[in-house]
Length: 260
Image (cartoon, rainbow, N blue to C red; front, top):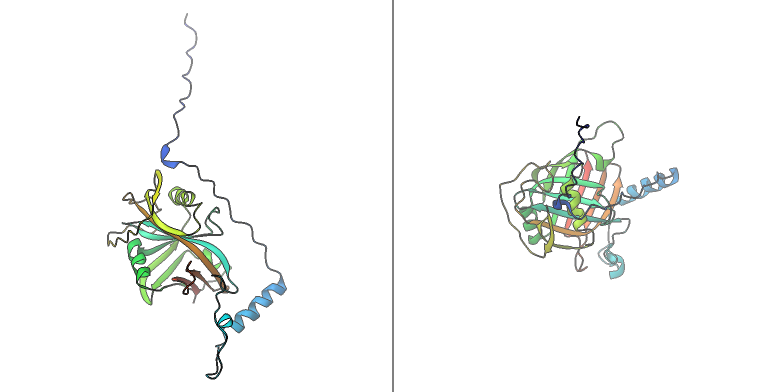
């Protein structure tokens, strides 16, 4: 009489090579709630910031005092890492991190093609305004789900906050050793080779802004990473300034978030 049949051993198939190396980004550091005195001080400072600056014609400030930038830093700002990235046929994404080794604290899909935004930045300063309506509750400004987007005064559709996909985290992992720079990832979906390039393709063939970095790929992902200065004006207004690394001019890109 034959004995009981043994079940076959479980298969040990190798992991897919399309996600190597593994994501090792760390969560952002927890932030303590400000004390009552700190909140009062912030309110007083925000009131003074709203006052116009009047300089008499006969008086001039020294050069060291006339500018608010000191060694690529804005007074009152917090340095963050910002990354613009996207494939040629997708709309661009903006990821904000405390540093390149942290998980994004903010990830937005912007309704502007990657090549179009990079082209605009190549022509001069770019100002992006993100507006949303005030609602009841205690939602943090960066947690608002959808924004009306304006680029240099022109309405450009919407920006959508979303959670990072595996492809987004993979891109962040590939760039974790880069603090500043721009280039092209030859195959962000599975090949970690990176080459510096200025591939400012402009295409009207775009996909859903809610999609991750890996949707509609054409094999080359363009990225630009820089230091951003985060300046909180109030609970309904904050700004991210992308600082120019050469220090010869002000921010090339400013992103304003405001509840109206």
